[in-house]
Image 1 (cartoon, rainbow, N blue to C red):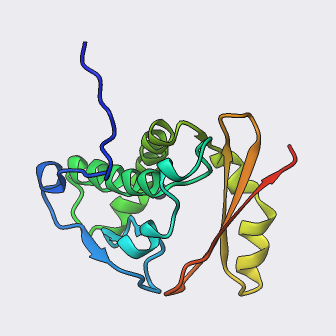
Image 2: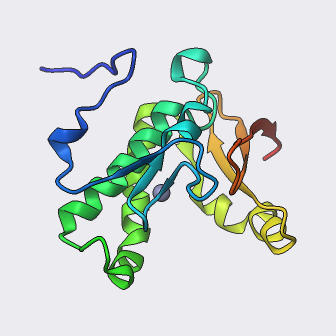
Length: 167
Ligand SMILES: [Zn+2]
């Protein structure tokens, strides 16, 4: 039986799995962590997340988790054969590929990202409406608590705040 251990530092042979270009940015205000539509990842934003080895139990999103999320999304998109300029086809695929990204992220982090809670979050609705943009993500942690992660949007200096919240 083979087992896979996540190497430290975390490395993925990108060239081995990607056929088309995935654009890399560093601290772009236009790319928040990654953009499925623009086939882009922001390595600066990813680096601002804590590493899995920084915290025990693993807290919320991690650098390793968001990186695998973005890469799996782009990998699934490329596997599908949808062209990088076919916006409508990409929109149609996003839901499934985003879920594949979340599944991989959960495996890497050892927690569970609560997508349903993100979709009904007051924060995700209200703050965007009031031009005070933050993303809110929620995770069921290994110790069974719920962690809320607030991430500033459209900033060159992404801020990530995490706190445990009641059920
Ligand atoms: Zn996604």
